[in-house]
Image (cartoon, rainbow, N blue to C red):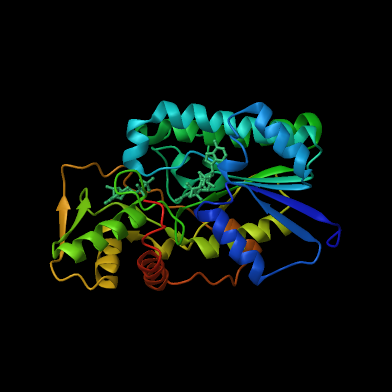
Length: 318
Ligand code: NAP
Ligand code: GDP
């Protein structure tokens, strides 16, 4: 079973997570695996005909489904309808064609920000549908929750092995460093780059108090390969650092300011939203499978990402 030939189609292969998977599979190759990394230039996955053409062309045996409309808090707050519709269309086209073409396994990507807003902590895999998500990103959340519903429906009706992973906040090379639309780490890295150049403080949105568990894209990619190769459940699995590694936005901002050796400190813009206060997730299930997995320390991973951004400033997505 381990040696059967696999053609693994990675949707969203040009993004933060896709590029990290490209690197991780080069570091841990298997002879029987051929990866195909898609970008939106290969076809718009919102379009059923384009999606069908892609699947008929590559005839994948396995799919890692990453493609999505993705954005930080402020982008979500302004575009809940777009996040809902675009992601529903992409996910339905990918899962429908995976079923039609007899794909053996699909691993799709949810996120810890889709969990109920009012919940007990730590959050675990059984809680996804237990109440409304935070109002800031309800469009993205409901579209992502539907992947889990679809995975179970495809399994019940057709016996398909479609599953999903639930990463916490991801960051690393090839992220979206846009100042308004990006997630907090790439957004603050870009702001710090400008602050350094202009000799100004780093302006952090909100109170700096919200808590997050950040996972480095390369660590997440290694875990994705484990799920692709070994995880047999339909139920999702949270891919997160330990609860003890949760940090405040203020602490992360300080690490970024230090990486740039900023001389004018950090200023909080408390007119801006904090979003969800926390979404502390349990990685107990993951630790049951991989008790010894080592995550890169946050400071080291931030330093690497800052180095990458400095080296690739002209071509980075921003
Ligand atoms: P990303 O860097 O924004 O990459 C998105 C990818 O999707 C790109 O390859 C993009 O292609 C592709 N794409 C977007 N719309 C498409 C369309 N209509 N047709 C075809 N391709 C399309 O996102 P990411 O951060 O790597 O996210 C990957 C997955 O992880 C997503 O499912 C996301 O929801 C999930 N996730 C992310 C985070 C996070 O913190 N970033 C956290 C939890 C879960 P182009 O490059 O050609 O535009
Ligand atoms: P979230 O984890 O889904 O809420 O997404 P983000 O990565 O956008 O993180 C948002 C948290 O970081 C909120 O508490 C924001 O107030 C805070 N934050 C501070 N500065 C920034 C920034 O420049 N961009 C973003 N996106 N968030 C910021």
